[in-house]
Length: 211
Image 1 (tube, rainbow, N blue to C red):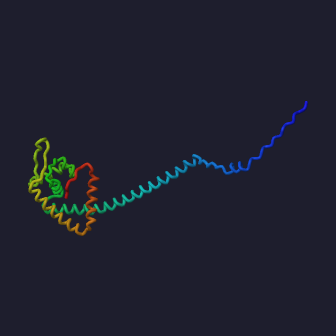
Image 2: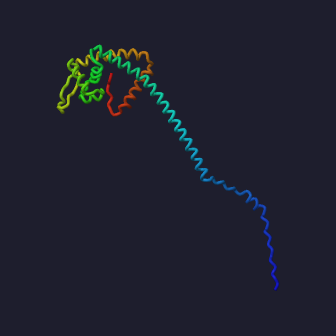
Image 3: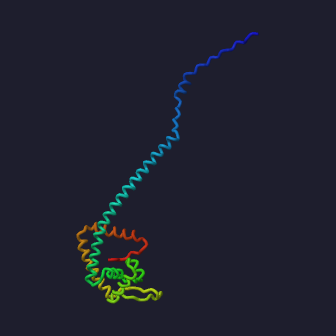
């Protein structure tokens, strides 16, 4: 039995133009691993957090410096007002507490003892003694609330208004002297800042004229 001869096949040569097409084919872009993408995002977030923390820290330092400056100025201002109040009260034969009470009533408003105790930060016995002494001098008067007879209302009298008006005028004269030494922009900044501070410290209470 004769064995059939196996035919040999040669692989045909690849045409030149086909090689060029394969050689010039677009090379697929390298896919960035997911881990590398996450790492890049983490770096961006970290930089934003650092910047935000740095800004917050700078703001906190600025506020601390402003608080120190405010407290230094406030102590001087408070001392001036206390001395002025004491001087005005002393001239009219009153204590500082009596003077503060008259100043609160000067606008003609009507207050109960409880309300005055809260706004003046006084104990009730101290307030009662203060009202008693001013009433004896004819500077304030008590009257029953016509709606609620349990309440006693405190109001200022004409004599009390005259005493308080004279004291306020003296204080305004001293303030005029000080304001004249300040620049207009400084006076505006002072008033604007104090008004904002008052609103922020007592947001739920109405503004009250106080001297």
